[in-house]
Length: 515
Image 1 (cartoon, rainbow, N blue to C red):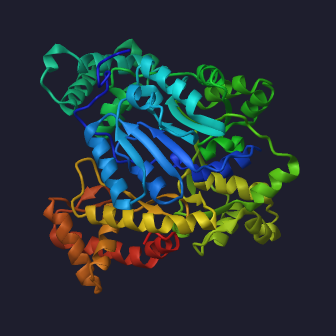
Image 2 (image 1 turned 45 degrees about the vertical axis):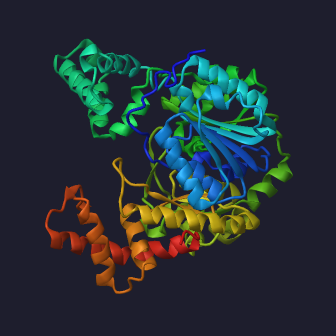
Image 3 (image 1 turned 90 degrees about the vertical axis):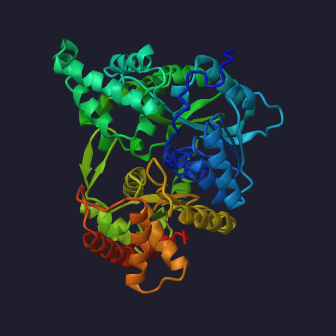
């Protein structure tokens, strides 16, 4: 076993404070039901390599699930532990390597084990530890969530990533921080492309990829591309790994992936449908969409639903909006392209959900039935909206009640921290006991909430409160991609944002019991 604590992993720059909804076990039932499968009741869960710990803490605070997790980075583990203490969730989060955590004998059996991207960023030794951990600790009927870099989408970029890492590791970079090394590696790649290598002609999008990397957070790039171990694995190889541990592929955790009509052409659908082997079919589908990142659920002992149970379970699923109806864009992304929403289908479904309350798919289908829309069309509509972050499955009423206290405590802590911000952009999600997960709320929106919590009532006082905290850190408002330098321009823009927030966004956040 490799005795190096970091095992080739970037440690001098923290991971992002992102939120990843696929880690939320409250989403399992709808995803599985859409695939014709029963799902477990999750009460014990584990996240391996939780990073800054935002996702695991939101999920622990907002539900009755008991969470465990590890991360070897001391600063990240400390941040996660602070959030757990603020929420009083009882989440057991520790600083530990996989060798330490995965071999513990005092951990429970889990209903749900999750890892976001970790499989692609750790050594073969650590992947073996994780596989053994899942084999020993996942219950019968339990679910593994794993997201990972995959072929064929990464095929063209792999040699360029290798070149960037080699430059990053050059002896001449000794003593430099990761961010400085990343900038130097990107500079080097741009100079190389300026010399018009044949590789660039054979792969015309790679120069554009460098330009995209330039715009991304160095915190993200350090962990996504510059770890010593960077592993791309095909679906077929993942299937072999987990079938050897007694698991089988259940379905995609990306709800958009369930919609072949939106992702594949008629010819592509016909070809995929003719492939009898379900694992080979997934591999073929990855070629059809040039998949580069998969989000998969694997289950130990899949339980298929009969036709009647399937329809009944789908009809019972409750959903709610996360986005104000008028702000849902008319073009949404699929795995491989974009689609323009059919207003005759999406409009009536969104209209039912516009009151901000949970509604079951069966209830929605009953209301929109007069528009010749059935349960399947309602399901497809909601899968697309959920997959793009505009809606979410709803927890059971008892779970909502259980999650109120922890959600309120965690949100109060996060909103208070919005005063300070952080070096990698701000935490932009708060906790909803309705969904058991995160709800988008950027720093300015959190500061509006903080102003109200601290007794500000007049519109001018609220705007002044927010402006003082933003300007104190040297920040300015960005409107249409342009940074506003003039103080009055910033105040005017904040006034407009405050009006929209209190009229449109706040009522939805209240319905979601975020505040």
